[in-house]
Length: 588
Image 1: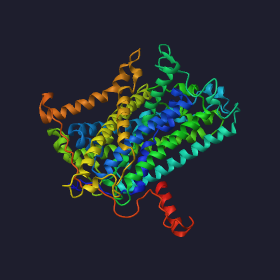
Image 2: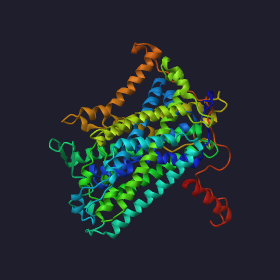
Image 3: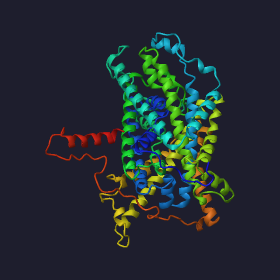
Image 4: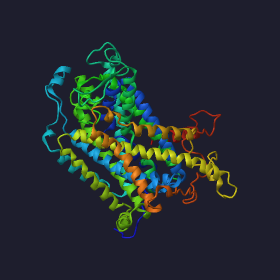
């Protein structure tokens, strides 16, 4: 290992980045959380919740994508807030985002440990008419610590690979996930159409005695004897809000596109950021909506295994709506296959969580001001990379924090996992709100620069210029929308914890991230401006020249269909080639 090298290797191609971001978003969230969403809100209202959660992702990813495409800096998640809002806000955002990702790593490993406890209650199998008396794996008697240890080792080793080989693996993982989810959707459509167990119609779960939305919301489902039941329109609204919060964990990971920028060799040539953000938004939104919809066609929202999923509780494959669909239709073998794939999915998402956390920490290590004085030697060591560009120090530190996954040995690991994931979601929401606010300032700053005659490269800041790398319509409105929505979600993310009986553990896990963020901001201002808050000054550089803004060179813009010979048939050789390149650009 070189003792002086501190830079990452730009060896990732566009297809690697696309699948790394997709794989980061597809952990256990879609497979285990979708059932929780259906239980909370009902099959129809669950779709509305997914759409609302998608709109938040759609807004934030466009803000981050445009800023990163113009300024592909290392650590854009905290560099942009630091540059356009306040330096202290940027550093605080960096640290809570890093911690969120190591928490997500632990959550994914905890989920893997839980998934090995796959076993159905025999009374449930008998009630739904399953042909076998037992369904489950014999691995449930092993200590969860065994699985935590083995899978942490696997995740750590894969992250020590050179980034090109790592990207190749992630590409394979992402392709497998897309194919599996697509086949899972088709599978659920088929069993709904065939109806092995006859029902009145194909939308039986949407009709009485069930319906479009759940008819009640239990405030504390883990305490049925004291839980308050809310019905009516108020109950439906609170159910929708709770389902949106539950959905958001499934979408965390789209910022991987920006995190990979320093290692992306195709950044300028292929307009990677622009296409990757658009493709990821469409893929995730469509797959999550379809997956939740078809799952809700085959499993009623009051299924006992869905009811057992508490608001801060994630269990094993027997609580997955897709496994339940197979069981309720008396299909053998498939439930075990699905549970095995869920383990694969959570593992690969954990691999990506370690990648993201290590790159964020490496970016922080390049900024002396982000560290206390007595940590400068540690910072310099963390900044080093191997000869192949792997930040060995930051990978090791981030991986070691993942040992909190050994909480799986506690009596109620599923509750611990739920609280951990909730804490990570709040930290990510804080990061997303600062990104949206950064974009609002960024938008007005580049608008001023584009009209400044003293700047030689002012055309680079003109959003209407054909060489501007990434622009979306109505983005300023979307930034405001994303900011307001994220702030509301932060404040009311776990309103249940405040509802009697008060839950101290749930309240702390849901809101301690807010306190930590403002404590970090205050600590940086104390460091730079002293103890008097009245003397604290905003320190935002508004820098637009370092690094120089990136522009797209002359030629055809990717992602846009332009027919070379519009007067000829579409199967003309040049027209057909242009069509193929357009389709391949959106598919790969």
